[in-house]
Image 1: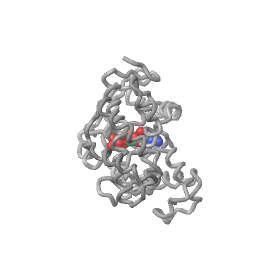
Image 2: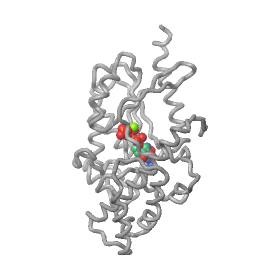
Image 3: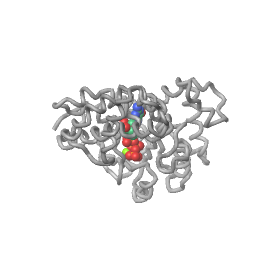
Image 4: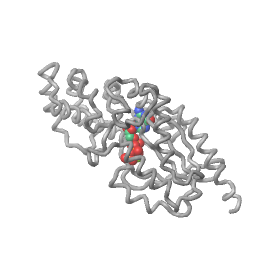
Length: 306
Ligand SMILES: Nc1nc2c(ncn2[C@@H]2O[C@H](COP(=O)(O)OP(=O)(O)OP(=O)(O)O)[C@@H](O)[C@H]2O)c(=O)[nH]1
Ligand SMILES: [Mg+2]
């Protein structure tokens, strides 16, 4: 067992993440090669096409062991240094690619070492979609609270209903705030933030959840910050009703917060909110400590009755 930042990771779990990271990298590069092609971006170095031909041989969805991954490393190095792939990456809102691809590609030298073991930070950056329903227990002041993680993709949502029983005390709802200019992978046309707001609407206004504390995480603050600074995008192109400064993170965050708050039909339903960066452990430590207080506080009376 290896303890990273107080979290215990079994060696098998670390190995599993290692394979997911290898997959994230090779798949990410394959997506970038495909996007470069479709966006008609000319190679900076025409010989990079040979490397791209190799990259597309990867069968998307396959996990890779270290040996298989190492065969791809030289071509990924060639491709990530070609300006055409960088240009495609800069246009990533136009296609579907994981947010963490550049993090892993920038770390390629370290990750491709033979003695590589994923760090806590690497694991946080992994893209591994939740398929199914996962439960884990966290003790808050020695009271065990069961956390249930469900997948957010459309195909996963029918599984949510079986988690909603009378023992639910809180709903933690995560929004990717940086996705205001992106469309869903599922239909390639619905705005991602709109989809998220519609789901939030059905949850907040569902009578089953009356009295349950709803905690809204306005996540991916770091990526939102980058976007707000970028002159190639502007929240007003997607939300013309935005009246603030489109290059002010505070204005954009507040606008998104109000968008979600306004769906609530009963204004007495409390919604707690936090602006978060899930890959920043310091931020999450502060947020989680506050969330723990909320959960405890809101459930104290019910717990006293037991
Ligand atoms: N930079 C950055 N990346 C993030 C943040 N939160 C999540 N990610 C990355 O976004 C990707 C998706 O994260 P997941 O945890 O798989 O998202 P999810 O909502 O559980 O997705 P599903 O399981 O499909 O519902 C991963 O690569 C994460 O590392 C964030 O605040 N900042
Ligand atoms: Mg998940």
